[in-house]
Length: 415
Image 1 (tube, one colour):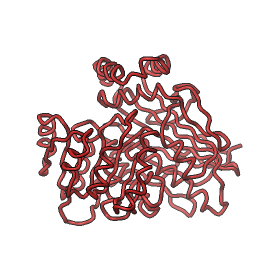
Image 2: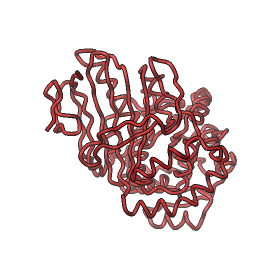
Image 3: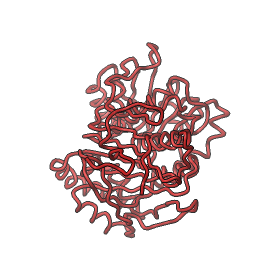
């Protein structure tokens, strides 16, 4: 076992311990405690898609008293998935581009979950607007900074309407934001009072992780965007899928190459957690996919949304064939370096992205239905959205089924 200079093993090899400077959650509970026996209707916009249906399955498993409604355009598919999930799950037709259609679909619900991506290049937050209009609490799985900022611009309207909303939830962004926020909080609250210097988000997915054409399209759209990073407190724009770095994701995944990609948690971590240096990088397997994405990055056809959708559909059969060979494992590692030379790390590994994406999104449902989230539009790091006392429970619930989950916040020095 390799030890750091302070005598501590690397984070992914450390045992589960609990002390004043360490808070580790390993494994996961198989149940999710709900707020009570009251029947609550939760509408999942995009509930017939991969993330939406996975979220519905996770909620049905751990919170059977919820009345789940899958909302989408494809009635045959929606009713089929609803029947498969059972537990009284229903389908409701909706046009997410039509404000009145969405408002009618969610009126009277206790929560609306918006997972109908891609969120890239959408110039209106129709579902959030409808949620504010009908006074229904809201969460989404947006992974686009521009759209997230557009949603954030509705903060005052949400406050006035008394509507709590949490944006950019899910796995990454989402759970990764909470991991980062906890690492930063515990570093600052340590006896050393460590000051954060650099935060690195590193993500790996084998193949596509079993996702569908919609999420493939999201990945391709991100390849058209300049990547926002932060260096010494200033924005630095870099080319997409550049800046290769080798990251050790632990025994289950090993060392993998990751590349720059434009994700909202970089900006929110910088602005909310006040960290001067922040990056996010992503990699996949087999390595051929990394090479292909680096070649596609910045190509002119990525500017045309319809062409990107067509390319995603054409790529889907090949992607699925390779997924059969490489599986759908996902891992994310969050590293925090502090100015006094100490480091803390969070590591999350799950055998199936399509499953854990649902579990991660479902974990955000609990605090908002329990009334812990204040009115307004919040990012996951913001305490008004997810109070500090709710973070550990959220992380534990999101880790359901993980092969390895650890939050190592005892400090070891880097020399």
